[in-house]
Image (cartoon, rainbow, N blue to C red; front, side):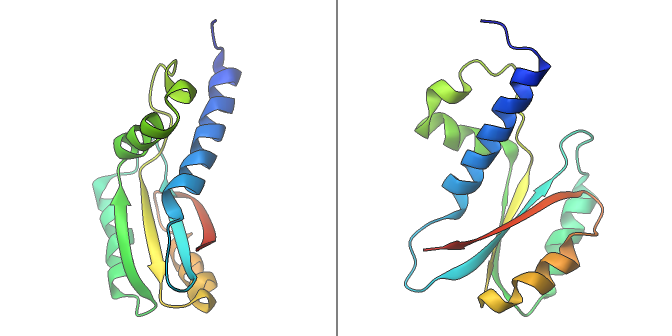
Length: 130
C-alpha cells in the first residue's frame, strides 16, 4: 500500500493526537493542568528557541515542572504501544515538545499566553491529567 502526502498527513495527525493523549496523562493524587508545547518540525525549531521557552518556564512561578520530549522519544513511545500505527511511516512526523505541569489549573491561560508568541512554538495544547 502506497501512502500519498495526504495519507501521511492524516497519519501524522492521528499519531500526534495519540501522543498527546498517551504521553501527557498519568496518575496523580489530585488533578493538575498539563500544558504541552509542540515546536515546529519543518523548519525545525532551533536550540536557541527551545532554550528561550525553557528559560521562560523555569522562571514562571506557576510552573511546578517541565520536561523536554524529543520527537524520537515520542515516536518510540508510540511504537511501543501501537507498533502497527507507525510501521509504515517513511519518516518521523512528530515535533519536539515540552510537557509542563502547573501548580494550579487557573494558571494555564497565563502560561499559554506567555509561551504562544515565542519563536519556534507551533501549537499549544492543554489538558487535565488524572
